[in-house]
Length: 420
Ligand code: HEM
Image 1 (cartoon, rainbow, N blue to C red):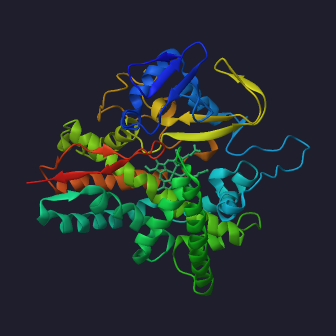
Image 2 (spheres, rainbow, N blue to C red; image 1 turned 135 degrees about the horizontal axis):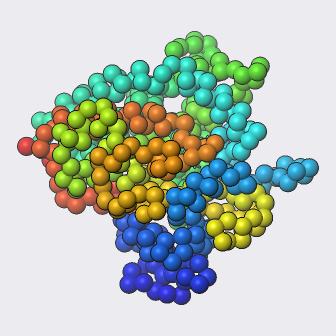
Image 3 (cartoon, helix red, strand yellow; image 1 turned 45 degrees about the vertical axis):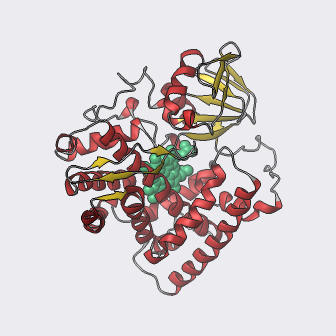
């Protein structure tokens, strides 16, 4: 095992393994440095502590995403009965939520769920939310301005996505603090260093959240409104509808996924723009410039770095033999810094041509699980970031921002800023 000069990382190039202490600030504060050291010797490596084969390169990540031999759940072999995973008693509600969530399913269940949800989602265009997001940003900036300083995650980056997703679904925005609390307790289960206490908290939050959503669905059945929950209830394809359990699972998934990543995408983007001394006038000169800047922010420092897949059948990929049932990880943050895909990959270049097609960044994933909320997340960033820099001229960092001790959700602990 080759120990690097970093105490939290050692690499064995011959065995293609790495030992990474994911709770060391040297790693979670700058995982990109670790990615490059490992990529140089083993672009596909076995992460010993996590027992995961990890893919770093953009081409490999893209190939796995499109390869149906990899999936979010392990499917039964052809002709075999459905696999019944052992569900610990203390995670029953959380497991039921996962089984009703498109993110955790593969076709044919995934296709059916995603189809029904997409229909409800696309009933009206996401772009119609633009004026509402702008008004929300203006309102928050108005509240912040007199103080001359703020903790931006609390004052700006959190309320925008939470309010937008709550309004979109038709859940009272007064519930926002409770939604945040449930969501944080649920998503903590995806952290690498989860404990039994994390699991118990996630289970309790799932039960409370489900009960609340069930009540809300019943209310919308009685008095339909022009909101996503009503559209989800009515959504129909080939005579098929979402079951009650699927409705609850989908609402929770959308509420959680709808803000957790976007909050940190806003935070990480503002940090990058300020640290890099980007000229806001050029970065947000017009719609095209804003779009390029937002995509570069998402490429440069995305909020979600690791997603898992199961190997459905014995196979060999990128020189590694993987038996059925192996769990692999796609490192989206590493794919985004692949020098084979991007010139000067470690440089932040807001005028970089908008990645599309083969050069698209991996921050929203790809293949059948490509983020269903990407158009909404992009819109929120495209409206909120220029509004912030125009609304608070002279915005600057107040102290060096620190990342949270959480690898999977790569976001800041706090973002203190000030303005003249
Ligand atoms: C910047 C913000 C966001 C980022 C970086 C992000 C990232 C992602 C990624 C990487 C995936 C794929 C996971 C995988 O490969 O297994 C995903 C899936 C998903 N996202 Fe997002 N997301 C964001 C915002 C949103 C929003 C605003 C919503 C909802 C309105 C949302 C809803 C979902 C859903 C429902 C899925 C599951 C799709 C499926 O399994 O077919 N996301 N997201």
